[in-house]
Image (cartoon, rainbow, N blue to C red; front, side, top):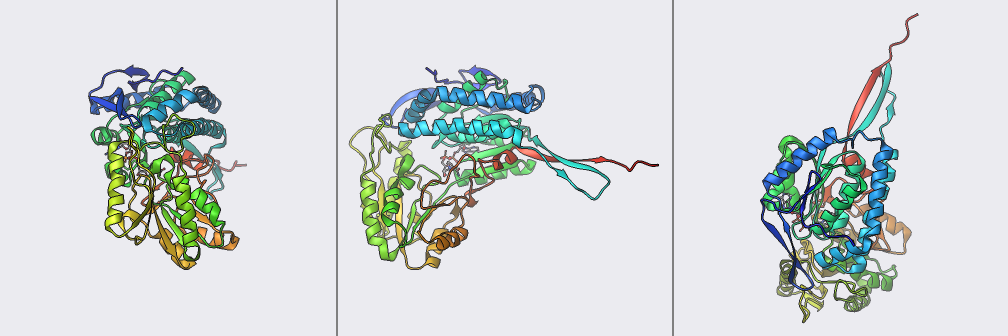
Length: 483
Ligand code: NAD
C-alpha cells in the first residue's frame, strides 16, 4: 500500500510544515475535508530553487551516463505500475475522476516515463558540414533548473508529461502541483526517490499559484518554465519570465471543434461525441465543446447525441461503472451553471442536463445547448465543465470558418468518409492536434500542444526533449596538414 505523502519534498526530505499555511483538500464526491497539506511560501521556493541549482551542479544526474538515467526512469515506471491502484484511488478521491480514467492516466504516466527512458539514447546532436576547415557538431545540453507547473484536471499525468522529458534530458525539476490536487504529485516525488532520482533533482512543492508563482517563475536561477493551465495564467507567466529571457512552454486552454459532415457515419459520431466533451466532467483542455454539424443531418445527429449524453453513467468516482464524476470544486460547478444560465438568457435551448444531483458532491448533469450564435460567450469561452454547444453549417467553407472562430487552437475532431475532404479540412483547421473519425488525439509518442492562445511549444513525443535542452554548437578546427 502506497502511503500518501502530505508534506513538501525539498532537497530529498519531507517537510510537514511550511510558511504558506495549509491546503485543505475537499473530496469532490463527498464535499468533506480529506487531507491537509502544507503550502509552500516564498521561503520554501527559495530553498527548493537553491537545492535544485546545487543538485544540478553537484549530483551526478546531468553527468550520469545515458544508460544510468534511463535505468532510473525505467525503475520509476515500474514503481508507478506496481502502485497503479493506490495512485488511481488517490487521484479519483482528490479530483472526483472516475477510477477507470484514473487507472488509465496512471498507466499512461508510467508509459511516459518508459518512452523518455528509451528516448535518452536516441536524442542527440548532429554533425554539420560547415564551410570552415574543421569538424562541426551540436550537443543537446540540459537547461538547468526547470519549474514544472501543472493544473488540477490531470494532476498525475500532466506531472509525468513534464517530469519525464525534463529528467531524461538531465535537468533538476521543481514540480508545483495545483493547490487543489497535490497528492499524486507528491507520490510521484516519493517513487522517484525510491527509483534513485538524487535528492534535489526532483522536488515537489504544493502551493497557491497566486502566492508562490511569481517567486518560482521569476527566480533568476530557474531557467525554464513548463506550464499547463489557463491561458490568462500562461500570459502572466510569460511576462514574469520575460526579463530573464527564460525558456517557456505553455499548454493552455481550448474550445475545440467537433465537426460532422453529412457523408460521415453520423450515428458513430453522435455516439462518440458526448465523451469527447464530457469526459472528466468537461474539465479537459481538449474538450470538443463546439459541435458543428452539417444542416442536412443536424436533427438526426442531435437526437442521437442528446440520447448518448443522457445515457452517460454519472456516479461515485470509485465505482468501476462510473463514466463521469463530480466537478472538482463548488466554484467549478457554479462556473458551469453560470454559463448555462447565460445560454438561456441568450435564447439558447438547453436540450438536456445542467442539473445538480440530489446527493452530496459537486455533480452536474452534462448539458447540450443549441440555438446560440458562434460569437456567444458560451460558444467562445472555455467553460471547463460539462457544457456543449451545437451549431449547424451549410457548406465546407462555413464549417472551417466555424471551427476556427475561436481564440483557441488546441485540438478537434472531424468526421467524414470522404478522404479528400478529410485531408483538405484537416489542413484548414487551426489546431495543434486533430483527429479524423475518432476522438483520440493524444499519444505519448506524438507532439501535443496548441495554436493561437492554446499555447506554445509541444509536450510529448521527442519534441518535448527539445523543450528541456539548449543546443550547443561546437566547431573543432582541423587545419590541413602542412607538407
Ligand atoms: P490555472 O492556470 O489556474 O493553474 C495551473 C497551475 O498554475 C496551478 O498549479 C496553479 O497553482 C498555478 N498558478 C496559478 N497562478 C499562478 C501564477 N501567478 N504563477 C505561477 N503559477 C500559477 O489552471 P487550472 O485551473 O489548474 O487548470 C485548468 C486549465 O488548464 C484550463 O484552462 C485547461 O484548458 C488547462 N489545461 C491545458 C492542458 C493542455 O495540455 N493544453 C491540459 C490540461 C489543462
